[in-house]
Length: 229
Image (cartoon, rainbow, N blue to C red; front, side, top):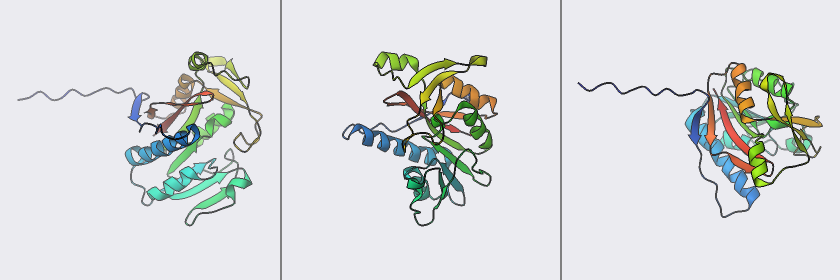
């Protein structure tokens, strides 16, 4: 009789999803958006699963690229953003609302998207938002502060300065610009290191974090998708 196969022990905060590679034939901005959209599609298909009968809320939805993707996948979608320019259109079948995500009621949604938003919040706002997402699959796409990478690439920005708080919390403070792509209502925001983000998630009681490989680059350093479940 053959021995039973060994059970692999997996660190619950180190599970990875291999993402599609970026397309090198287009401009940097379009390549990044294309990559992010394809990663998002992979997450919905491979990790979130069946969309029928489930609701998805896109926080900080902007011009709706990810909300439209979720709708195409079959979710009943609500898109929320604080700025009126983004909320001037409502695609058929989608609910688009103007609302500050810091006060937006998340009850009743099955899946939550925090795409390109978390790093525009202060630390206490990040903690509060993730706490309110508890017990539901939550997709995060965010900048994470990686000083070694920034130094090696020579891309340090005067808008970003490192900070170390009590209890080993590390990251950087970003000076926001006030434009349409910046934080709504915050002059500064907190960018955690990846280790600090993982600790934050663990401390809030999440039992699984999937880290999408590879991370990708912005002009400030490292970004990555994470899925909390």
